[in-house]
Image (cartoon, rainbow, N blue to C red; front, side, top):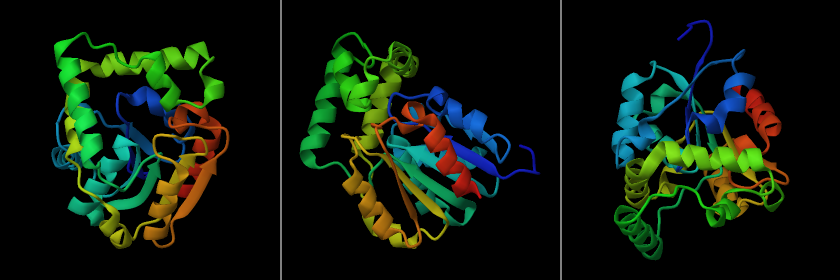
Amino acid sequence: MNDAKPALILVPGLLCTDVLWQAQLDGLADLADVRVTGEQTVHDNVAAIAAAILDKAPPRFALAGLSFGGYVCFEILRQAPERVARLALLDTSARADDDARRQQRQDLIELTQKGRFVGVTDRLLATFLHPDRLADASLTATVKEMALTVGRDGFVRQQRAIMGRPDSRADLPAFACPTLVLVGRQDTLTPLSLHEEIHAGIAGSELVVIEDCGHLAPMERPDEVTAAMRRWLG
């Protein structure tokens, strides 16, 4: 990395790749040396994902994650808080899965292993995107392509990691770095209330709500998300 700029590590969400962050890779390049990790598809628990990211990261860096990527960020902060200069949590949750949600994920893993992996279906798109974006053929095709790139085995590893993640709510008050908490107003997977909870738990954090936006904010409203992240990077 270029020592003249701060390092920024971006962590994608479930069934997402670096394409999730393409607008931010372009829009933040003048402020930071930006890299997108792929470790979230390689390991099946958040502790191993966090350790692998830390192993490859510079001594100090800014960190941002969306959804599953946010769970990984929480774990990185537990393992090495002194190395994280800034934190951005997008469309995520500090809570662990309850028993019912874990069982749903386990059932989905079993179905995936028995049958053909189809990635993101039209039904799942309705939970990922704002209703107005479902007619955007280019965006929906890109989301589906990301899922197919992650693939069946990567998806299974990710689901297992998500199922086993700890609850992070008790850790929030210990996060002392400048923190951005961002959510799409119409995110139904991780709604605004969960981000208000994170915002309340991290002293001095900034809560940003992106209007007319679902779960995949960096792709749905790239300009607004990039602008918020530019302010956060300072």
